[in-house]
Image (cartoon, rainbow, N blue to C red; front, side, top):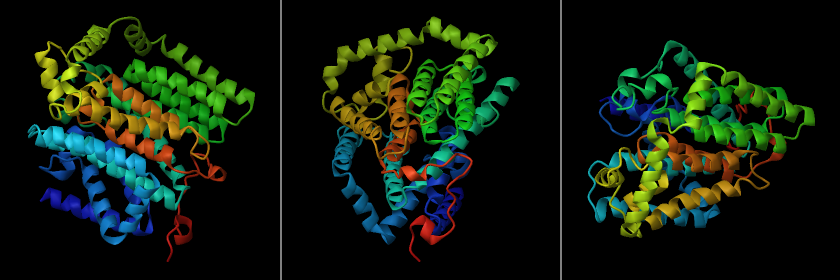
Length: 429
């Protein structure tokens, strides 16, 4: 019954999208950001799929029934990319449900692979019809990032997460990591960290240096609260990119860099900074050693998974049998074992190419680097090998990076591209 109600809500949102094309896109982003996978059943009842996945399916279904040409045109704009995606999906499904039978893998494949790919397609359709919509998406993403940092800051002062405590407490690591490292409303601290790190390059499309500096400080603060080493490194790269890429005065660029350095110095004098510094200079309970063990084991068994894998989630069993104390802690390794090295390389290769394409001219400034950050960060933890928003972030940022961009439409984050007329949205009455 609860699922039926949610599907009705999805239908209403999709109907609103007829006049407000980005309504479905924005709500999907909000759901992925503010509803962790572990708590998705709060909205959908007994359904194992994430609420945002259902919204994506309903939106794609309605589009296919009412305007199928838009889907065909989107595929036609990037034929090689969609061919590669289709090839990878065939291999993934074949490894999981044909060659092997993985009864528990259906939900994970839908939520972290299929739904995000369909979301990529929907974003591509809408950004082609209205390239200025990228500003609206950017604004939503950055505002979500600010809210996540606010939630994390309050949680750090109170000694734990503010929301979904009952659901998150079912995770084995929650009793220790969950109360010492910020996770916002995500399933784990590392997903929050990669999201905030990906937000920083997007600041290149904001014209006001003061706003850029303020947001850099905010996102840096959030990353420090997660104690994520990888995302901290990516954030520093993002700041360097802003200093080089931003079309502002040298003084403004210098202020961004100095502001980030001052923040790091100040924070490192607090207990939070001590925690991060400890993780940077020690093995943090063996996490680095565990990753080395994972790669060592993978190289020993890689020949068994050259083409097909053991099926989705099989990497956990392989790792356990191989003596690992954790998972393989890398998306590319986990997918290589699950689906085969060939299909894993094609899958992440497509994402890498789409990200690199966004680095060139004619694309939203910073979007390509944001997409590259996410593709890189997911390789350092379980990420898309478990129920997290990492899969959606990979394809969402890739879609924004790939879309063509009108430089004249760059606006500040406090001036969202709110459209109210058919002409503004590109929809003809």
